[in-house]
Amino acid sequence: MSSIKQAAEEMLLQTIIPFWKGLRDEENGGFYGYMDFDLKLDKKAEKGCILNSRILWFFSEPAGQTLPRMPATPTSSS
Image (cartoon, rainbow, N blue to C red; front, top):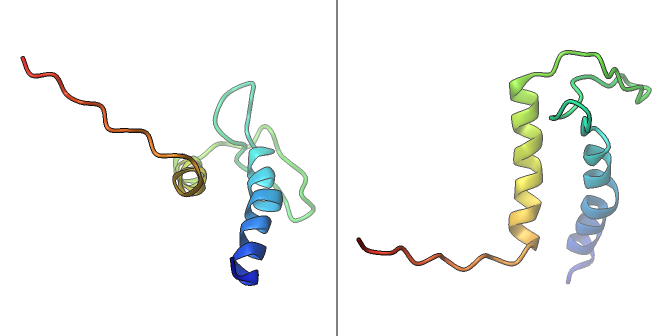
């Protein structure tokens, strides 16, 4: 694996994903809606649909690249 690709993968797995996982609102669901430049989380800030959608998309991308593919489920004919 090239050193750039390896460095990017390590950054993703060791820094970026844990950061976003830390914004998960375990009590009310979804992700917190606001963090300031000093990384202070405002747990009462309004949650936006677009922000939560983007975060979910972010998690689905690396999952799709790193998790094993599920086999296709055969459909039953009636």
